[in-house]
Amino acid sequence: MKNFRSILVVVTLFSGIFLCAGQASDLRNWLSDHPAIENAIVWVQGDGNFLLYPHWTWEMKKTLQNYFTKMRQPSSDLNLQANSQFSPTTYRVYYPEAQAFELFAANVAHVLDIEINKRVPWSITSLPPVQLKLLLSSDSYFARIAPSKTNTYPTGIQADRDFADVPENDNQGEANSDPRIGFDFVSGKTSGSHRSLIGNSPIETLALLTVFMRDNYGHGDPHNGRKSYEAHRWLTQRLSADPILPYGVMNYGCHSAGKLMVDLARSVNIPLLAVRNQNDGSMNDGHFFNRTHAGLVFGYGTSDWRMLWHTDEIYCMPGEPCIPFDENTGTLYDGILAAKIYFDHRWLKPQTLTKAGFVICMKRVIPEKGFGQTSRQEYEDRYDFGILGGYWKNNANSDLSSLLRLVQNYDVLGSDWFELHQKNLLLPRLKRFIRIWSKGFSTNDLLEIHSPEDYDKRVSACLKAVGGQAGIDKLIEVWKNNRSKDLTPRNNLQTQNY
Image 1 (cartoon, rainbow, N blue to C red):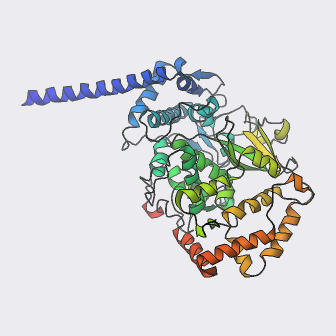
Image 2: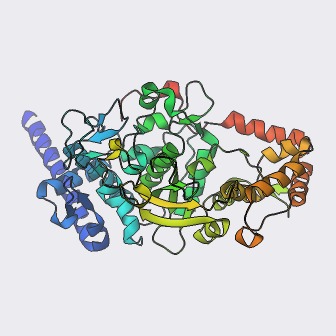
Image 3: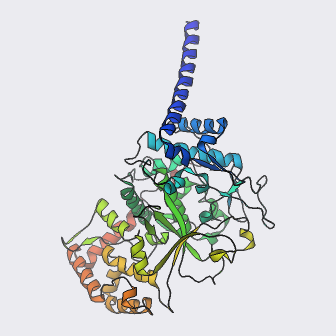
């Protein structure tokens, strides 16, 4: 019997070795059969050298293969954040070279696992190179550190070798994470409601994620100090309900919201490009990072791309919740159709943005050049400041971004219109808003704007359909009561730092 057990152990051991070897071989063969993806896997070293996957060392390829195997073992704790370094003065997260590569390899392994095992209904094989880069190139996850005369780094961190946050996440203190955390949440496995946000296509999924943001989060305050940063450092914390407020907190506002959307979309193989956008083209309001909002681009590199110009637009602006009313049927839209309508009026195509007065740039900003000319000493270790998506035209006291939101809210029907209607203030307020926000621009320079009377008629029709103001109040109350239902309850949140 003893000899039998010994033989069984040996057979089991060798079976495991052969299984892992087979998976590694399968991965190598799959990549060889998909050269566009194989060559999109790029490790950008701290010294600036680019290493495409075919030129990786055997040890680097082995690391990727090991993580690819572990992706099929959801119970394994990869503990990927153990060696990242958090600066208590700048709130920047630093990554030693070895740790950065481990995190990168795990994220690439996750992307490949989702694709090869068909865990979502779409494929990355048809994506253009610029979108594959957002999923498979390390400079989409980490930024190189330039030499600095003024910055003091955590112990062991070295310029031109190690890494910091990418520019769009600068000084937020929100670390990169085990990619399975995002996937498990989006698929409903670990969310509070267990509702899957994975739709039938990337655009349907992004619509569901957009509504998820609207219904579960509020704007945070970065001035609450270090405790606030530490309370939102890990993805598990950012996906949990606040212990006091009736929603989750985006600690650094639109920038945190942009980071969360990138993380969750990327966890299901949807690449989003993070950009920074300005209220206007002026460069008189301090440093580039201080005068810009976080925005997102979906479908970058194609003719059908869309931009969410300011991520605050989807979770903390007046008019939420919206009342998705269909005048043709006299009923409210529901489910994925309501989500898609909301998405279409927040993520806009370039021609719509341009008509609304937004100047599209899509240019990388270099310190002390162009829009980066006002760089400060603390940012001298940045090789670039990320991508400027664009800025709004401005004339005196005009506010074209607010005017755009007014136009959008005609269709999605912002709930604030009902309160104004009840107080007989809707018509005079709308007339005033339109006059101020469009000041200095001709009709030809603006999107088509509905008349205040049109808004009033639409609000009246919706009120009639839902039973008057009491019906609207009930809808808003239900929305408030359900806020953060998708999030993990804070008191049930595990304490480990991943």
